[in-house]
Image 1 (tube, helix red, strand yellow):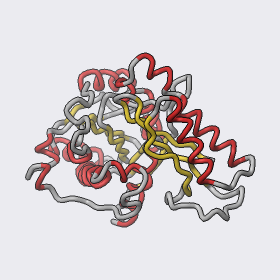
Image 2 (cartoon, one colour):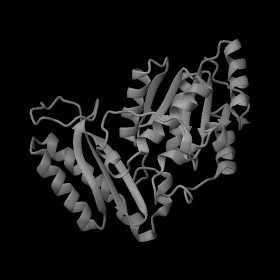
Image 3 (cartoon, rainbow, N blue to C red):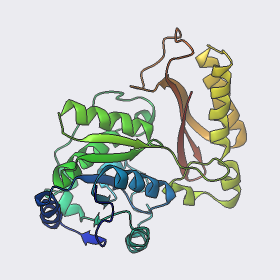
Length: 291
């Protein structure tokens, strides 16, 4: 593997990306893609480190995708910092190409008239329950990015765990020759999962925010101690979050492999995960923890 890489390059059209990636292919370089919406932080960089270990060349896409935002969500205000992101990536030396396309390059017929990709698994559950159309938008843009870059590897973060499961399902179902690799959630020192939306938190909310991770830890500890009444544990965690000032959407224990609901007969060796989404002021926070 060529880990030295090349100087960071930028591309803003599909044509430019395909030409550059094609030149890498001529010299038998493998390619990894890390899809992002920008406003990069250490969590993103950790994914790019994984990508660098897995492939000769690394592409980071930066695109705030309109089709995964619902009515009233923060598409217009979502933080955009392309120049700072490119500067960070150039300094880190983990990425060979930044692909920052224009919306018309991703959706040539417009986002409203675009072909859509539906992943039926978990339709209407967990985050999909409160964000109808969100994962359809995610799948639709990621499939386009995969078609443009044609990577050997795609690296995704575990913080957006439902997204990870659904995109793995899409890649497998469509028989795409791409390995999907997951990177662990990166956290602040107090346990808060790193997110571009954390900047929406006020000073007091920022002090409260780590309690979301704290409740997931308590759920985990209860289950490891032998508790099997999942509904009671979930309800208790949700009430604790509400008492702390959150507006919880859900706290649920699921099977980690496919996010199906446990049947209550799992053994201590079964691979479970607890997931949560909760509003704190203007910030919608999500987190998860393996049991």
